[in-house]
Length: 327
Image (cartoon, rainbow, N blue to C red; front, top):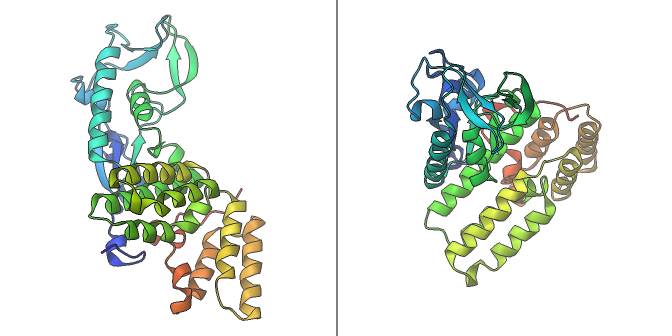
């Protein structure tokens, strides 16, 4: 039986999230310290299963260790130790390829990398000239770059960008959506289960990419006549691509209005909801205000379709990630 949104079973879905081990407080940095991030350990930690990774430690560099940096070369950036001038590029890229394959086997739902790290940064990593002057600050880490290339639809962020409330909410939403689909497809699912899953995620997908929502819907419609593995792969591709598209205020407004249209409200209550949606569109209130109001009104059997939409509870409510006004 497939879990319904809002049930204890679905709320208990724990995404598997790979993470730079230093961000969890593990003393694996070059100086023997850590970079513990309180949002990850204290706020998000109770709701996810972490998969800690430290490529430097796994490459046998130990801690404390000599600092590393990327240096420009004719063949592309090289990972070098600063003082002893040891080239670790091949060792690190080989490790990254193996780890990327292992993460695929684990089917992780996201990855949080250490910002600006020469191995793990996702952007803004400096590349130096051999004389020591920075030549470019737009590169990725050698390890993270391989992982991201092998898993282009995997939600990834660094702890610095997760301080931005919009990026934080987007990342967490995608991670939990990936986890729900993973749990479904790991089980003994039938086409009717995928139909129900797609229906529950309709509004969430429409807030990101209506075209890809329809593409995923076509996969679902043909599921009964296609091999399970093919259906799962095609649906996963469309689902993840849709969520990778940024949700916008305009698309959220369309979804809110769509949900309102399916509720049987008297004129006064309907006008109240319209006013709140307008306030959200105008940047006066956060998304949590109209979504909470619509959830409040989505009571009774007739409103079950709206009430059960993952759009209204895409991750545990206790994370309180929709309390920022649009910009």
